[in-house]
Amino acid sequence: MIPLRDSKPAHTFPFWVIVIIALNAWVFFLEFSAADPELFISQWALIPTLVDWGNPITLIPFITSQFLHAGVVHILSNMWFLWIFGDNIEEYFGKFFFPIVYLLSGFAGGVAQYLLAPNSTIPMLGASGAIAGVLGAYLVLFPRHTIKTLVPVFGFITVVDISASVMLFYWFFTQLFVGVGSLAVAAIGGVAWFAHIGGFITGWALGRFTRNSFRV
Image 1 (cartoon, helix red, strand yellow):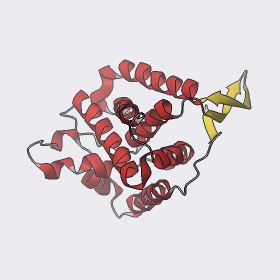
Image 2 (tube, rainbow, N blue to C red; image 1 turned 45 degrees about the vertical axis):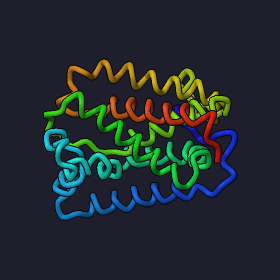
Image 3 (cartoon, helix red, strand yellow; image 1 turned 45 degrees about the horizontal axis):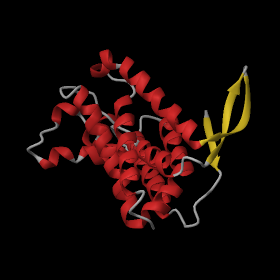
Image 4 (tube, one colour; image 1 turned 180 degrees about the horizontal axis):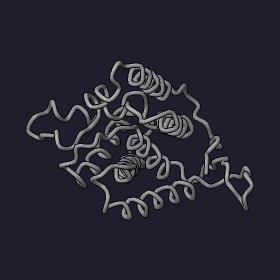
C-alpha cells in the first residue's frame, strides 16, 4: 500500500517537515558525492559495537544516523511518508516540540535495534525510526482520518480511501511480524525492523500522553 494523501491536511505551514526533508536530501548528496561514501557512513552511522553509554560522544550517531540513507528508494520512501503524515503531527505538537518528538522517536528506534545486537559492527542508518514515530503519533491522534492509497487488487493497481487506523495498524503489525521473524539474523544486517517498532511505540506513547492535556 502506498499512501497518496490524507483527507485533512494541516492548516499551518509544515516548516519542520520541509526542513527535515531538505536536510535529508542534503546529507544524501554529501553521502554519495563523498570521495569515500563507506567512510562517510562509518563516521556518522550508528555502529552498535562502538556505543559506550558512559561516553556521550559515542551516542551522537543515534541522531546523525537518522539523516543517512542506503539508496534512492530508501530516502524517497521515508521522505514521502514524512510528507504525507508529518504536517498534521507538526501542527499538533507545534514548532518547538515536533522536532523533539521526531528525533526522540528516531533515538528510541535506534536503541531498540541496538539492544538486539549490541556487538554488531554493521552500520545502522535511516530516518525510518523517526518517521515511524510520526506514524505512531498519527494513529493515536488522527485515527479517523482517511488516506487515499494505491493498493494492488488481483494484479491491478487501484486507488482507495483507507482509514488511518486500519492502514497504520496494518503497517505496525507487519513490522512486528517480520521483525520477530528476523531475530535470528539481526546481527548480520538487513532492515532494522525493531527501529521501526521502537520509533512507532514512542510516537504513539507521546501522542497518547499529550492527547488530553496538550493542544496547539
